[in-house]
Length: 360
Image: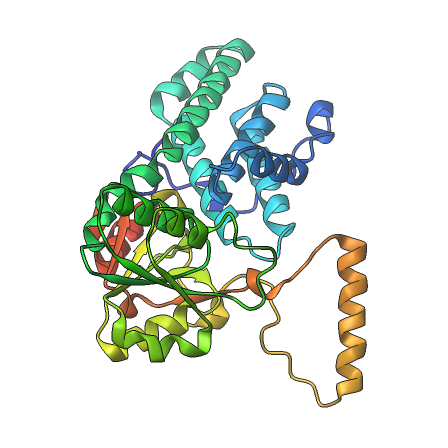
């Protein structure tokens, strides 16, 4: 299985045409809860990103579903991928994982060699092929976990002696980059843009880790970003998804920081694993397939209180929350200096060209 920077031979597929729902005869599959599996995987492994957890959940699905035909397998994956994405307000990370895995499976199942094997025989041949899919999928997930360390060693070239780096959020890739630079003895400073809406403490976050390594960190609010830019060498941010035009989807406020950085002539680096490349081409903030109420127009304070009470009841009943610290925005490619993945340092246009080739 290859990441979205690879060139696995993949046929034009039934992904563009919604397949029928899986056969009801699959009793083992009917009891499979992909949403619970996904959240359990995320909770059990701190190294898992959303795309990798989604891939792992689909692998568990294949393990729990009985051997069937190629068509039924593709239908099963499509049906459960849609169910998983529908279960969350922000499916961008999930889409990166589910689309990547489905594309890989289609490439394997529709390859001439596997097609000949399938025509020759039987359930045993198909069961063996599915077992290979599962094994290769697991291997991909394990290898993809190592991407963060590879990126850290590449991106630490942008953290030099005497630099001051501005960042925000709790990107594990950014954390790895800054820790790698600190471990190499580089003396630098960090300006961390804190989110007033973020829950919890910072005792285990990026700020605490850097301070334990004797790296000076200044914490500022979003309103102080423009003021701080005069002291900043560069901006380094993570991403929930890298879209087809080379832009990035990340924590709310990233777009604002990138706009200010451009006006001040400061470079913006996005560090992200290639399994976060997602088949999406937004033209504006409002093209993102996320359910978030950032702009909530209301004429009445009473009405607003009633709406808030209604939202709280819905969150309590459905278990679905929309905290401000979970909101995202889109940073267009013209505001990004470079993206760093495990494949190296690339411009947004180079990433865009590669992704368009892969998804065309």
